[in-house]
Length: 517
Image 1 (cartoon, rainbow, N blue to C red):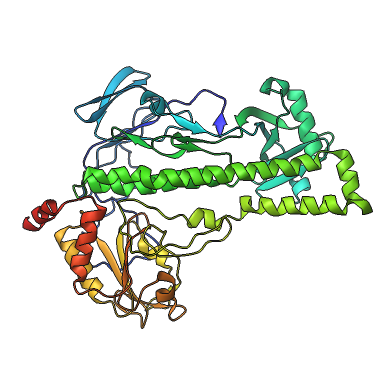
Image 2: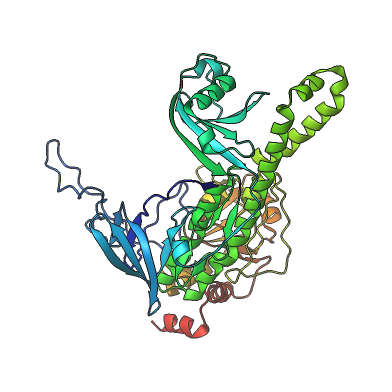
């Protein structure tokens, strides 16, 4: 979605090259193949009335403390900063950053540009955007009004209005008094045509309250279009979120895509900065994420077109009269078909979960992953696919999901006769073959126990994951399957080492150097 307004100042995060293992705990911790280091003791709570330390200067967040027995990264979060220049010197990015105190330069090995649809970093690095044909423009009217009587306090997020005098969508921002009403502009109209009086009139027509007195806070014009950057990285600068791709909001895939970008890129940057992976691993970011962005952009545009078609039918008074008559059977059938098409906007499990990566950070196993449809998710554990959900049972009777076991690190899941993979994960962890991270490992199937889970439905793990009792899958930190062994192997540790060399773009010489240490 392209917004017609000046971009906000860029927020910069300065980060040292050192990256420590700051991993948030997940819901169901998995017994690890190698014990992690002890967590630092929590800082003492100050007594009531105790004087707090010095406050950070206005506009700057405090630098994380290095106290508590643990060294954290030197991180500073700065607000009101704008990147106005970029050049490459000796393989590093040099940014010119402008703030209230003037200009300064920052040097970084890598830069993550998540600075929005009108990305300054994208412009500075000369990256182009492929755009589709725009379907029109809309205006968002942001207002405050108590609509409890009209909504009857029903907790719906979207309210579609289709009437001869107004067609639009109400978006509940707080479920009570903060609202957005989005209206498509007629051909030739601009934001200037939406005066305060006209906006009030539209809101009265849409709510059915002729004397509504809305508190209109702002109006924003935006284009129903899509754009995907031709490159997602260049010279150590990586684009994520709206800086890499923009779609219309019909389908809600924009934030999902942005979060997936960050998840994909973060573990790869960490692996490279910790010395566990070669820089070539970062080349797989674009190879994996750009095809997904193109797929999501296409679907969001299709959703927008279907929505427009339905609105056109409902804006013609003569057509509405015909629809309500005995002679309107054909028109009613056409409208019903249009509603069916719009279901893809709201039921898109296949679109959200069914994409499968294809890059050098995966080991193909010779199988072809099943293809999901927009509203039909066909779960698979094929390399490149998202780790599929399966309900398990632990020794306490808890019922975690396989997705919860994934956490933020590497994970090996083996069949009920795959205990050798547990030992293999411990060996690979000890030698650091996957970088300075802990590899979780568990057997799925049979009786629950130490590093073992029962299936809620016996036999479901092997069937869903496509492996035999001695097979296994290796899951990356972003929850996607890196490799799958359909059956047991003579040397499980060797198999994991081979995957490490390929996925992390390392050669044998690097591996032997690590072993020698």
